[in-house]
Length: 81
Length: 133
Image (cartoon, rainbow over all chains, first blue to last red; front, side, top):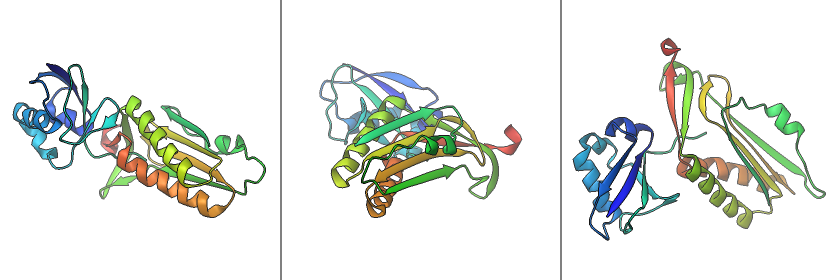
């Protein structure tokens, strides 16, 4: 199945692109997706311990299982205000 | 609870916002907070900050915050305005107002919103050095 990944702020700088389409097996977890992204975009490892992941507009933990067509956001630490 | 969220590239006019304040009977506290861009970041002088936002998610996360506020305190209204894009040093990046019957809950809710938004609302800043202007 395919999921679309969006990189924001510093993660976009590290990935070198704003978005990517990832082909992953059904039931892939957020953790598995992130590990795949770290292999494909090694510079993202700088954010390994601090990045958060949203699916749609909600945060999801690593054990969340992705579905076909999910839109995943890679979020460096927030800095609003 | 009334709530208003504005994400804007326009300059925040705190005086204008305050002048448009509406307070119902029984409301005795209006707490306002302005977050202003400092002229230094990590010890270096900067000209401005560029704010990036994942707007669809930011609106949703603010809404969740407002729901928490409404459940926790007897707040009549919350208004939040956050600048996006380039904000010059000295300009207001975020303005918020909480109206409540008493100051305790107004201060508490205001503090909660600014603390939590920095944790969960997807907005990021990039300092722009003075020599990049």
